[in-house]
Length: 230
Ligand code: CTP
Ligand code: MG
Image 1 (cartoon, rainbow, N blue to C red):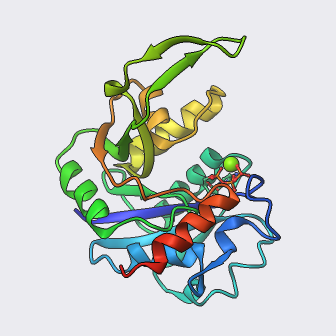
Image 2: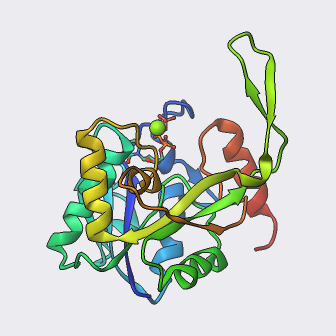
Image 3: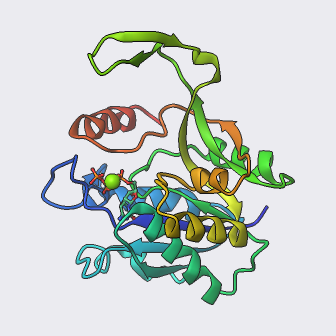
């Protein structure tokens, strides 16, 4: 299936607490955002990309990838969901149709394996709703009480961690996100907007090392991953 891509990259990386937003930190000779984009730019089914950026972002224009003709910019918003919605709106001006597939992928998730991307595309090509890469919970899970004591052990077999890319039809996703934002529902990924609209996104199992770089130790983990031959 051919697809469009939106990369929300307008966050400030508060938890990373670096001298710049984490998507612009250098790992293995390039910024995290460039690593992230490269995985998709190498894919033959990619139609076009919108990167949602903070206003006055000084780091993007100097990247080599900024001049790639397949990439457009959009103005990021206050929350991730605002940035994604702005990206989806910008795709319309690129000629994207409501029935087209769009993938949304975190700028800060640079270790997506090509096999995972391909499995997502293949698994959902005929799906009426769409879905997301996700990883089954690995650890034993506890529900905590306000007193910091275990109330119960949760059934792990039905719990998944939501990753990206997340893949939906452009029109359906735009509508679900816009409505959820208007209703001020907490939306931390695209799937939660679709769920709020009454739909059931499909979980596609992916690799756990498709990590979102969030805290300083994640950067070290990434460096270790990439110091092995890939
Ligand atoms: N993001 C965005 N617009 C926002 C907030 C986040 O485009 N208003 C993007 C980030 O750039 C990142 C992705 O959404 O690629 C996932 O968000 P997160 O990991 O939370 O990144 P930050 O918000 O930058 O980090 P933090 O929450 O620690 O500040
Ligand atoms: Mg954040």
